[in-house]
Image 1 (cartoon, rainbow, N blue to C red):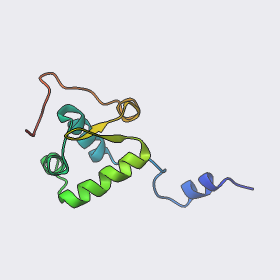
Image 2 (cartoon, rainbow, N blue to C red; image 1 turned 180 degrees about the vertical axis):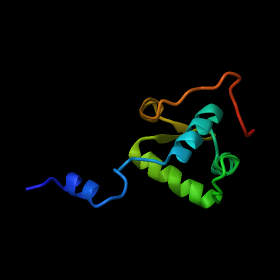
Image 3 (cartoon, rainbow, N blue to C red; image 1 turned 60 degrees about the vertical axis):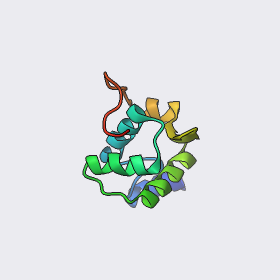
Length: 100
């Protein structure tokens, strides 16, 4: 008998909780600008070549909340310590990058 997680990996696709390299960079931008709104996330993503409508950004943030990567805070979304550690996110010298 083979475990379901092994079968899923053999069939292709992503491991649950995996995100693309582009979105890891966008998460780092979010980390450097937090708290951020969905409109700001959309702008950050566009700055990285990923065109995301605010409603799509909001849906993605809710998915990331379910995965434990994002949480809501006064004024918008912030990264969890889980995401910061898992994706090795770093604060940039000088702080904010694209939005405000």
